[in-house]
Length: 176
Image (tube, rainbow, N blue to C red; front, side):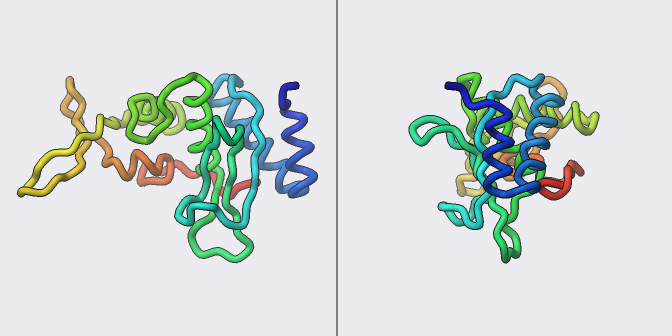
């Protein structure tokens, strides 16, 4: 039996009340606006802590089922998910569902953040392939410039945190 959007709303509403329903509605808006409503409904799990400490969210597909846990601690200082975090995890979800590499260093991730930045901000960015080169005798991670225009790539850290970066994308607080 397939998990439906109504199941998402019911699950989120039972667990987190109106806040949970609002998060599901934001997922639905992002799904329609940026993924042509192709993403399969998935349980959104709001947590007070994350199992790996430094993550604010992750997209789980495969052996442990399908979920998007989002960290919203009762008392927090920095590890808090927002609507940009939800969109970030939905990019992972989209890539998983299409059978593409969902990792931040992968070509599909770079392609998707370039596409979405253009749709959201109307700005062309370049997210080049990550390579390791020797600079001054040290192994240094760099991203390749655009092969035709020479446009510099965003650094890998910015690519991995997309849309949380200097591009000015801000969808506000989770569930708002």
